[in-house]
Length: 432
Ligand code: ACO
Image 1 (cartoon, rainbow, N blue to C red):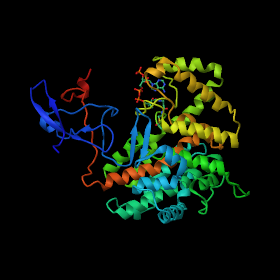
Image 2: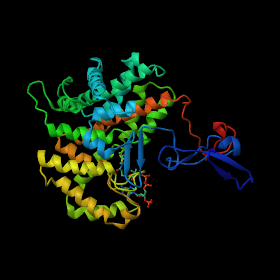
Image 3: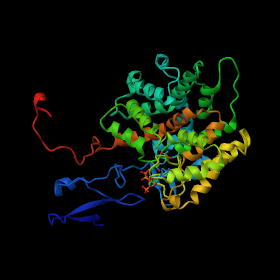
Image 4: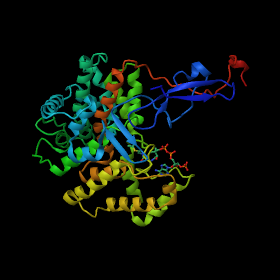
């Protein structure tokens, strides 16, 4: 079959060139513009990457118009209903669902890496007691390469694998320690007989002086939220991990850079921002006022947990989390939880409003996740940390995929320069 191409006609010079189309298994094809500058002398301009594919990937697929999300081809609804977080992490890392022995082995490997070097604990005493747990997490994860030199050779697939296991395994321990430090309680060591999420609950909520009973519903809810958050193709934090990794930086440093990008309220910080917004709204009768604020272009306020760059339909993850909210509240909280009621009403009113209809703004994954976290007793400033734990498995899968690409090269965007043309240096005495 002839290679499909697109003809670009340059109306300025009259030249025309053929550019190849890169076609994936599903989704729109992309015009390969890598030779555009050489052939026509132009860059392309796409701030915010509105229509730019930055890589080829076979990990996650999203159809934003239809509200479809697939991990390695499997619909999110099926994985959320039938799988576990570690099984999905395996799927993302290795491409296929594991057999029972493979999953058992993977689970064992991850649980063997849960402890962190004792010296890492000293880092926490350097943080002020009220440090945001995301701030300490960025620092501690970035410093992992100072402890685990034996897994930083990015060209060695074995090293890459060990680094991936270490990060997935140690993230809950680091998160637990960040939380314990922020409340002045002693760090709790991981217990490897527990599941991934039960271990996290144990490290966050148990104390040495008492028995701690893990609630099965809490464990299940966390596992589900982690499946929903584990990957989302080339979002801001994943692209940051890939960009940092493209220079050959070690994987721990790359994941730390992903955590910083995730923290912003337009991205993973939205789950924290949603709860703060619901607290601020306070009462259903105030909702119209806040919807009006969100629509007012002179007001920076936005409905947090609403809208998405890719989804122009209901975010499939939000639908699953909303259902989980009902179950969790029924078992652990109050089915008429005022925050949940407020969120449901806000969704209902926003989805009837022309502004939100015209712009196709729907609740995203983070609109309801904070309500579950709250019922589980997870404090608001830990919400984005929870997201980071889950997303780490996606980040390492994407990083590994990128490094393994034979023609991988440093990512280096171009720019349209808007500054002064060349000019001569003026001695200070002559400057006006
Ligand atoms: N409230 C009010 N208006 C909104 C909102 C919102 N939450 N989101 C988008 N809009 C409006 C914009 O003002 C814009 O209006 P205009 O066409 O009149 O200028 C239009 O909808 C398109 O929005 P953009 O900002 O251009 O969309 P973009 O793709 O750049 O941004 C984003 C997507 C950042 C998610 C945005 O919708 C937003 O800020 N949402 C709130 C924060 C949030 O929930 N983030 C979490 C995203 S999911 C995740 O990262 C896990």
